[in-house]
Length: 289
Length: 249
Image (cartoon, rainbow over all chains, first blue to last red; front, top):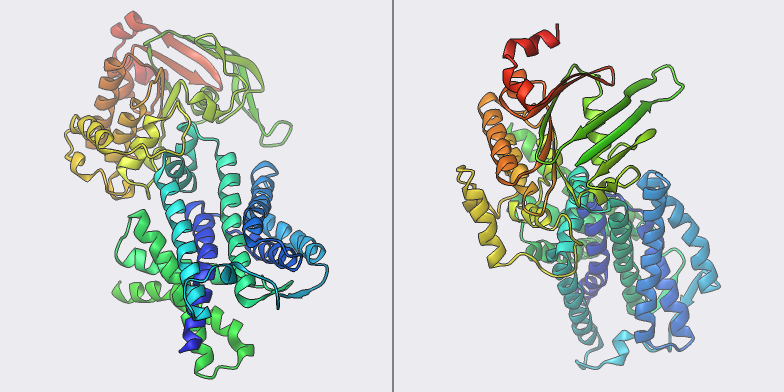
């Protein structure tokens, strides 16, 4: 059972990432690969600062700003230099690999005796339960903030930018600036997941971001299936479904390992699983017609 | 009110497919004038409209609205004065957003989009009151995504959206080209009513010579990036529909 509890906790750690991917992919319609780099960036900063005995509360805003800058860079490259968004993301992600190595100083940082977000507060006696409550509060706060943002005039303009660019420009919105802001926000959230997971796993690794974008995509696609099935338009329900998507994704991975699939095949299993969710609605649709 | 002065626009300069879209047009459009532009495909009508809207930047010449030089101003900044209805109903509205969200953005076209929630019960009522006037029964559907509506309904709503915030100039780029005849008529009547009620200065591009004849207070014809015919209100009043067809002979 602990196995699934760990998966649940990981899912909560990844929910910020899932919200970030939701913003870049679903709201702005931009396939943003910066994710892999900005996630590791968040982790690297958290790792190195914790080993230097910095407070987790000091690290938090720094991680958010760093992730935001990474996302804004991708945004600037794609809007101002007119480079394809996918390529812009790959460029920044590749560059970040070096930055992350410089930040960490080596490729792996174990965090054995350092304090963390989860050791600062003691809500429950059991460490896993303690982590669960802290993560839950954390995720609720983020979700409330994003949900509120999407409801504001700025948020509506954000959603319109990815939906009908000609319309929103005619209504007085600088779409370039909007996309840069959106990608900054998405990657700040992604970096936040790096911050959480490093403290949860008690190590930072230069390769921790490898294929992390697929976790975010998978979570959002799971959520999207529900959104389409039930034709959901309510922003709050959509955000909650994205969180549930992140958790389901981790539970499925845990299940895959539990039934004895070789861990080496995990990436393959992940890809196959995402492919399955993406294609399911289309398969059933083709039968109907 | 709108002063277009010796404006030029060339696409693909120096290449084999060079297009001289607008060749030095000078045009004064008075306040509350409803200008109709007709012309064959490739005559430069849409380029001229895009130059006014700012989605195309001129090679030379100036565009001035009410003493403000707009020549080098980005399109999203010109939205202070200008509202647009596009040929494609998809371009003027956001499909995935609700009717209400679309109207909210339109209501703050000339203002910054800030971090406060603008949609409240008062605003909802305001939108419903506006939409009732269309007589399409859409006032009960304001929470629905825009994408669930027909092209005609969307164009009519786009027109209404343009007067949600202060608007001086309304640009209509073949707003009925994608619509069936009945919807097209309804959209044109709505446009005409709004232009009169809100005392807008309007520019309409159309291929429908019946609309060109029925609507507007001035008509110009364009050919190869130049104005070849220009009739003011009194001249247009004496114009016969057949004369218009002769323009294209």
